[in-house]
Amino acid sequence: MKVFNPMQYLAIDIANHFGLDKLNYEERIDWVKTNINSLENMTEQAEEPILFAKAVYALRQTQQGIPTGHTVAFDATCSGLQLMSLLTNCKSGMSLTGLIDPNKRSDAYTQITEYINYLLKQDGIDSVEVSRKDAKQAIMTSLYGSKAKPKELFGKQLLPYFYKAMDECCTGAMDLLSWLLNSWQDIQVQSWVLPDGHTAYIPTMQQVTKRVSINELNYTPVVTYYENIASEKGIANAANVVHSVDALVLRELVRRCNYHKGELKTFLRLHANAEQTKQVDDTLWINERFKATGFASISFIEAIEYNNITKVSNELREALANICEHILSHPKFEVITIHDSFACSPIHMQRLREHYNNILVELYESHTLDDLLSQVYQTEITVNVGEKTLSETIRNSNYGIN
Image (tube, rainbow, N blue to C red; front, side):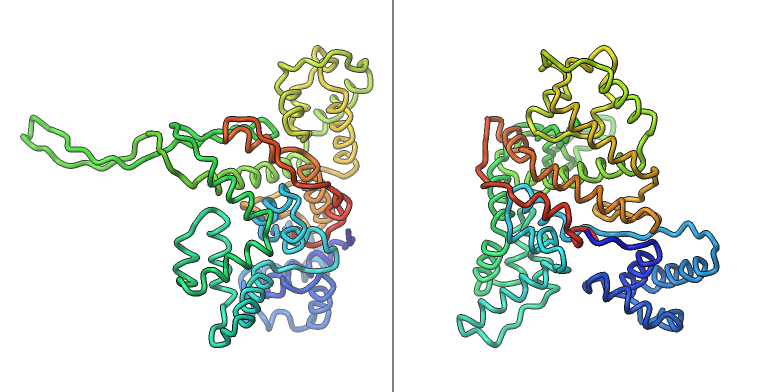
């Protein structure tokens, strides 16, 4: 992973708000250096003028040695597609979202748009040029199960080209989409437990229309309301399962950045002083979650105490110890999160990027996908996603979050 200093992260932030976030980091930094004396005059040209002006002001204050409290924000590259590709070990999808080409600032929407237009021209359709804006709307909504929006944007004639491009560019994500669309259960609540023990609980709400009687008024109005009723069909799992994994990454990242030093040190002391575990307690929820997913959430240390540490699996104890030691090697810091956007002081952005990549590697190496599908299908499922050989590539990626 490329290393930048706080001033360079501030320069990247300025360039991002100007609208240059599709360039690589060095180009963004060089742009700020080139225009360093005229940045204030470029505010009206910026894509985000208020945020641009704020970042430039922070730069000027920093140049004078004045603390600012300014935060820089890095966004995940197409987070839904990124996570779906990661879980399915899809190389093309991970390449589109910046995970396996360390020196390329990928733009999935542009690349898929270009491929759609290439397919059209291959078939001699030169009169149509699909825009990135339309393709982006179709891609985002289709990955969460919408068929109406792609049809509205592409029409009957061009729709096959859109799906052909998606199948070839985002094979893993489209496979996962299909599995999730078919996972709907005719029950009142769709529910599953994430690797860190959080439960996704989504009641099935259906619109009901009934006539009610108000005797006092001699009035029988028709009332429409929502009621928790099972439904034979539904597509919500496609979006909700992926969003729940998105939330898992967010929780894990915040815990590792803004950690509780005492809790981490207490666990490390318990782990070092306790005997090796000879008999794992499968009823202990952290053992169950780790066995089911292979993902060691840092939140697990909150459930480990003196009287149960020798009941926690040795593999889990070692994984948590390694994570704790890495976390403690850098001071804690606050993170501001908005969905898949993570902001912190430029002083700490290098560490935030490291944590993000490490979490994705741990998810990639886990069998979280099998566990989630088994829960939503309510039967044991194992998916063959091929040999996972990209861990270090993902760990050293530069543009998965940028």
